[in-house]
Length: 598
Image 1 (cartoon, helix red, strand yellow):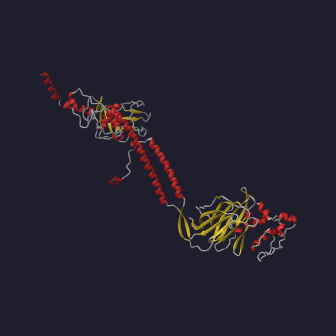
Image 2 (cartoon, helix red, strand yellow):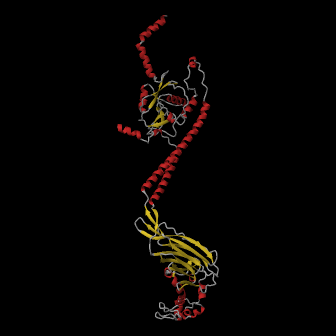
Image 3 (cartoon, helix red, strand yellow):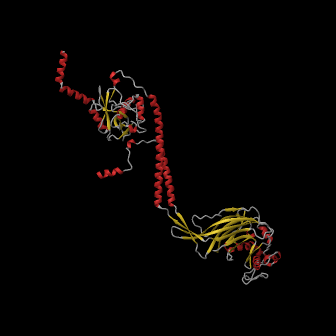
């Protein structure tokens, strides 16, 4: 036990007595608000902890070879699908197979006109009319090979449709003008270049799909006419469109390089680009950054991020350049590695402790500030009452009393001023406490007893625990406690009846709402705490309940004609006087006879 008692000295969390705790409405409101705030911040921190963290690092890209996948989905608002072509070429001069990997969808008023078709097939399927061929009986047999009119090659010796004749002419670099439309394939298909262009006027075209290109710098061009390659050079056939104006406004629904990974941001997604004039050329310059994403389960995804800049310029009809949309991309030499990790449990625990400790510390400071401010306002009001209640000391008619000097530092106050001063806990001078008030003597005990034991002790002395029924008696008790050696709590004769739940004094006097009461704050007795004490200076000499088995000092009151000393009790003094009389009755008798004889 001695060792434990020594350890107890290091307790930094001293516990106040439960009976002396004051609960206020302001404190309750602050407690509820702080609890809700702590819960909100805790769940926010928990949600942050449960999410994964992505750590990025840079390194030099040492990847060689491979392919770069371009994911494209855009709508060209002012150009029908048969008005333009798509061509992709890298820095080495290799062309990507854009016609087989990208799809065109004819759109009008935001709705699809036809199903998605590959770029190489859209014109051929649009121009073929199988029903008309069956009606005219001009359907070709599978083994029939028609002439290309001088544009045959070893790879394509036959031209069984007007589109194949046009493509053969483009491969040769020959012009396909109105005279060439008299070829039998074009006549059978009722092909007319100008009429075909007029049929799709007012339509828009959606281009979507995936395009694989070499992992080197390159470009993708969307421009009017047909694309031809002559002697390694790209040429655009714009016959029939030379004097037309083109609206190159477009909307990019999605554009990315490679696979999608969590947290990816594509700057051009869902962006609309409106042309301010006709025949505008748009140039997008991309810096493609190789990226590797490593997930928690160990899987790795090789993909890319990019940054982009845009430049547009209006062209005249006499310009040698063509309007359209051009994408130019370069591969950056730096690679980014993104690694998915879990957040630290220690960091989460530290954050939670900081949140709870910080919120409750700030709330306690706020509650203390409000409480002290409220007390200060009350003290200010009571200070005014004290000033008004002070009176000058009256001159006593007793000459001996006039000659008795007051103790240094003491002044006489009126009963009202003294009582108000005791409530404010201010260290002001008071009168020396007396023990007698009216027909009662009051004695402050030095020992501690439970409430019942204190009442029995007072009964054996011929009295009871102190009964305080008015403000004047309370003032006397307060002054008595203030002048004692133990300015602490004392049991008084007030308790709560367990059966009737009513407060009553030991003199069988019931306390009503109109009776004098001096409670500390909102504290009231309950069945578990039904015995009343009168507190000392620390709690403003107020009443508060406690458990009846707890031991306190106590105040006894006994009927008497006089009392002098601080340790005076009437029954004890009377007994001593009677004993003194028995011991000295012979001397007193002789003294009486001598006085009578004289």
